[in-house]
Image (cartoon, rainbow, N blue to C red):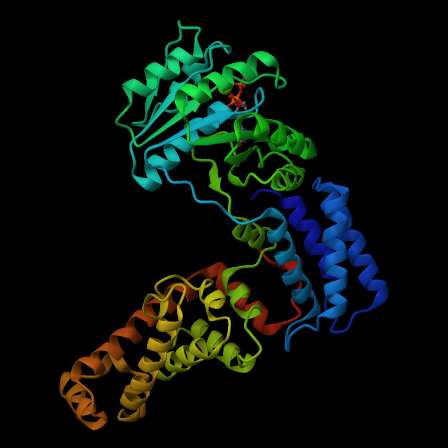
Length: 454
Ligand SMILES: Nc1nc2c(ncn2[C@@H]2O[C@H](COP(=O)(O)OP(=O)(O)OP(=O)(O)O)[C@@H](O)[C@H]2O)c(=O)[nH]1
Ligand SMILES: [Mg+2]
């Protein structure tokens, strides 16, 4: 993953709070010092580094960790929210009737990213994509783009003999008027000089591109900020792609620098191959950076009114592979009780508990009604039936329905729900890495983050 060394630095800094439940001044100072160093080594600027560490310090002093949550985890959660806030909310890009103009300095990865994006939208959104090579300055640009998209059905438009970028763009757009998305690659320069500015303005006008993506090499670190600001003034950048995050330890600088320009980071490049592109979502990115696995998040974010022991018990059941109707019931009950249910649910595979992704108020009420009905039905079942719902035959279903005053289809629905949840659980416990992490977490709630696999 990108920024591994930052990740390691953060773990070892916060690891200093290990086995602590109360703040120790000395340790806190050491931890903050290490964290500061880790952020600076990843090229976060001095002001941001100061801001983040000060925020962490004051929140650690002011906010008590919730019951059962270690200081280290508490610090991790604070850092998570602060970093996500710094990098800003994600932005959706719709590839319908869209034209993306790629801009950026020389060698930052515009042509490569043009090919990556074309394949991304073609594959993930199933839209028809065409690319236009409008770099008339770099010899071989058209060949480069053609080669990158050699195995792809994406159409590449170019006129290697023509030295007017504006003409090429005009012709290309005409030729591919029926494409859902057209991506235009342009020339780079060492810096934004007059000639490039004029060419870009002309292309921008002719193409009427609704998206202008700025491509920035992560290696430039903090100077990404001023570069982004310049291009922003010129072209009204709508999204930023940070490339080569695979090859540098200092990518934090570029990420944070552009984050402060107001134009959101939309994608990151993590390799030379066409497939090496990731959508940038600050929350996911940071949770991966901090090694917060899905289940880890589920338990750490469990709100106060959720019974810790019950959460642990259910998790253990999940691992054991046994999952009865009673387990499902208490799980759903727990889910419907907790305050921040939406957040909690966002950590679970979508489709679990009958596909309640983000639950609205109505859905919560519906779930509560379901629970009430399930309770009544389950009261008419024997212990064996609750343990082995798969074994319930249709004559028993009829009697259970009669006994609980519901329709047979309601009983079947309960069993169906159990079946779906069980399969989901099996999928989760079949995930070996998650399994291992969870088991270790059970044994040692003060677990060392450094040992976590990422
Ligand atoms: N490791 C790595 N290399 C990348 C990434 N993106 C681009 N590159 C490499 O960076 C070099 C420059 O990429 P180009 O796509 O040609 O950059 P450009 O901005 O089009 O360059 P000019 O057209 O000369 O301005 C190439 O060798 C790419 O393979 C990335 O995300 N990771
Ligand atoms: Mg290029």
